Length: 270
Image (cartoon, rainbow, N blue to C red):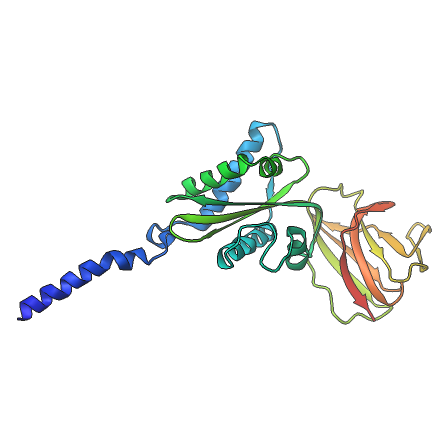
């Protein structure tokens, strides 16, 4: 009786084994590395660009985080669209989740891919993007300089992929205080993204009082705004902003002398 019971238990376990294994996510069964898939997609993107004489994209971790968020939401909320489950567009998501990036152009690619190895999944995602005219145009564009890639596993051998593209001027690296008083100085530190020459780049402040006369270092002045020459340390630059242009919302942009791009970081002065 004991021998028969042991045999019965072993038989039950053997019968149950396929079901137990089938319940595991395939990436656990195959030990697939999502980061390797993302890096392989990045390699394939720049290989496609090099074949056509285009400069390689530079990788940005913040864009990758933004891409992973959208891929994860597509999986978790069961949709496949550039507009997410909260009706946000790609630009609206960037402004909400990556506001510190001051970019004058932004685009997004999405796709689903299948496979059982990192290279197969990456190749299938790239094939999908390259077969779509709009997505292919983003991959081979001269309008962007940076990319971030986010891949998530869905089910069986299915994966969601998102690519974010940008032409950024800089990235705010220092937090902005919440309680800023009129007359105080605010010190801001940025990372240069390499798309404006150091001697040309300016930090622009748009003041809440459009009639505020702001005298520049050379004696010239602007009404309601100022163009500050930043201080550089390697690829980082700093600007010291004196909050004397009224109470309300101060808008910070990047540009050059006399012109700027209307992409802002904002803070309030009380």
